[in-house]
Structure formats: C-alpha cells, structure tokens
Length: 307
Image (cartoon, rainbow, N blue to C red):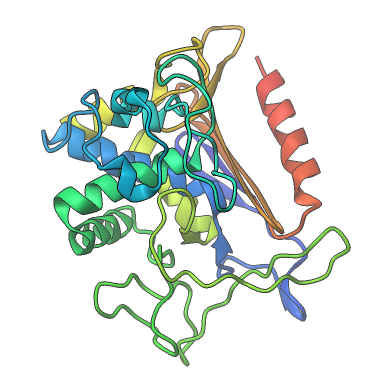
C-alpha cells in the first residue's frame, strides 16, 4: 500500500509474499487490471487538449467489424461517454455473442471494458497501432513509470524491442519479478501473457510507479494542458450526477469535495486507488489474492467516511 499526503508519496507498506519464497517488495510487478483505465484516460485527454481528438464527437468506427449488432444508438457514443462509462455497452459481451447495447448511450452509467477497448480500436485505426503504442509508452516514460508496461517484453529481454514497452522490474537476466495471483484458497494462478495492448486493463505496474502517476497527474505537472485534464478528471460528468468523471469514479464528501476511486479486479488481483485532489491525499492498495477484496472494500469505506 502507498500513501500520498501533500500530493507526494510519503509511505510504502509491503506485506506477505509476491510469490512462493519471495517477500513482497517495491520491485513486484502487478497485473493492474482496471487501474489501467485512468492512465489510458489521461492519454485520451491529452489528445483532446492538443486538438487531436474531439471528446464530444461520435467515435468513428465500423461497428460491424467489431462484431456489434446493428443499432442506430451506437452512433451516439463519444470518447467522453467512454471515459465516464456512459456508452450503454456491457462490461464484456457474452462469449460467442455480438456486442449489444444494454442501455441508451448517455443515459446511465454502465461500467464497460468494451467501451474502453472500442475507443482504443478507433484510435489505432485513425492514428495507427504502432503510433498509439509509442505514445502510450512515452506517457509511461513521462510519468517515470520505469517498471511498467502494457505488453510483455520479448522472452528473456530486459528492455524494449519493436515498440514493445520495458520489461518492468527486470533482473539482470531479463526476468521480471511478477507478483503471482492467488485464489481464495491461496493457490497460485497461472499468469496470463500480455500479447496485445488493452485499454481496459493490460498495464503491469509496480506500487511506486502507480504512486508516481498519481503524484504527477493530480499535483506535480503544472502546464495549461495538465490543468485542463485535471479539471476534467476531477469534475462530475453526465448522469447520474456525481457518479463519474472523465476517467474516474467519484463521490462527494459532506463538505462537497470530490473523492475519486478506481478498482482493479482480475482473478487473484484486487486493487484500489483513492484520490482526494483538494486535500492532496491518495492511497493505492495492490493485492495478489482473492481475499484482497475485503481489504480494499474496508479501505474505501474508511476513506469515504472521512469528513
């Protein structure tokens, strides 16, 4: 767990094992699951701030090519609706079935990994897949997330190759110190390879790396572009009021300040990031066991109850 106060990382706490016989440490590389989404949202908002993307224009994509059932409402989906989970798309379509809307775009929050992947596919089509991968790697570099990556490095490589991102916290032999997921009975789970970039959740991170992202995104970077992005990430957007910003979930404390939140939830990995931008406070909790969900739920409840 990382604790930020005054907009700066102040405390790192490590407990338990990253893998059998290997204590948890700052070098442990986690499947970030949906903690990927706020960082991808920053990338999208940077494109908008530079005039390269219209957040409120319908996404240009052939829905038939991604296996979507015909529906004229699909033409209402915009990048802003994707980032605020108001596309009306499901989190994931059932196996073997076409992609169908479960709500009208813009009318309610429906958490959707499909929406984030739709936006990524559109950007890859318009900007080029290699360019998008390079730009996302550049973003990791600028956030000083030196041990993080969207895709796995070549086998046995300790660095980048052919546009792939770095190997993470690599040992001299090029191997990576992955935190291994565990099921509810404590049995280790097989790690899923990262063979393609996914906006929904393929980012591998270390705890210090994600803390650096929060430091820079909310308090460190000071430029007109960063200030515009920060405003979009910290203000409620769309309906229902107060449920989402462009990139984060949010709630209002009793004094009216906004608290941002994002969970990461993959088998054996249960994570949570909480940010109070006005107070300069944030917490990142990364766990590599199914039991971590009880911990992150209580952490969220305690953070939310603070006036």
